[in-house]
Image 1 (cartoon, helix red, strand yellow):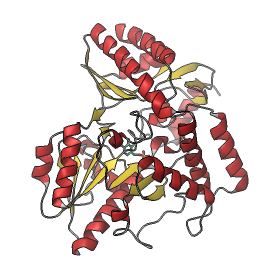
Image 2: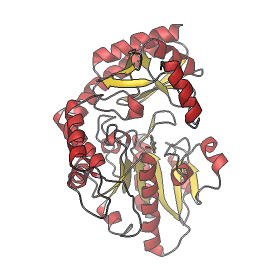
Image 3: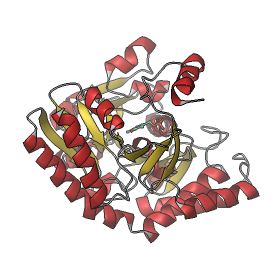
Image 4: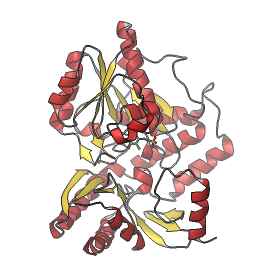
Length: 396
Ligand SMILES: *Cc1c(COP(=O)(O)O)cnc(C)c1O
């Protein structure tokens, strides 16, 4: 079958919840992807900030194959070595104390919300606690994660949401303070908003929210699903700010392609929230997924990924700034590290479609923003190659 035939079959079988780009991808090497007809694409999407180490990393592939031959699944009724190793390493790189592995980002958010509610419940015995989340945030599509997602368009058709969520404005501390009531138990935000438009928390805001939480006895929940795992040049984006969350979520690049996420907490929260029987998952933390996490964390260290991101990210910023200077339709560049956005004065779909025709994979964040979340192993050469193609696409 050719690509068009496959696409027709896809649209006849899959539920149409995405307006997909018109290519069928087949394989990857480094920072390049190939479709089933052999066309090569430079990939600045990385499976939405997932493939941090690029495609077809031999060591990673080998670790997964070896684990498949040993044991893929055990359930959480038993211990398994990959989960123990992965949890130990995740604790070390995050500075958090307790890890719960999930299958996805949304599930990590669900767990974080449950942990926060249980913590508050144990503290005062009441069951009407409130959580403050941010407008324009994105935390996933399951009912709990959707309830704290600050985009009414995503929520409305599925109402009622879980109750007692209040929304405040990112980088507006007064709006968070104004949302606090006697029932508030936690404040949740993405350290760098992804889907909402690549908006980093300002240092003043994050420190202010941390201080507010301390003062009012609230938990700070940071969603690091997109901005974590080295993307900003820090293992977790909050590490740059000198604040620490009480609970955090991680996923996307955590497994570099194997579906896995986690929520982590400090010992203080871990000792007074979820206990045996409160939460669970059949697949979460299974040996195959955790073998991936274990190897990913090893490779981050061995390949000095954080140092590399800190070295190449300023160059990406510089080239994007130059692009902005050349094109009046670009209003703003924003983001952190290798998580960047260009804000246009018009919808960007046409530019992204044109890029695809020229062998460049880009994605949007909202209708007017092009999002750059490439594999973390990109070099100056790849950035130049991307800018050249994008420059032409905007010109047209
Ligand atoms: C992608 C994302 C999620 C949801 O993760 P899934 O694995 O798609 O469920 C949650 N929060 C943020 C910040 C994300 O970027």
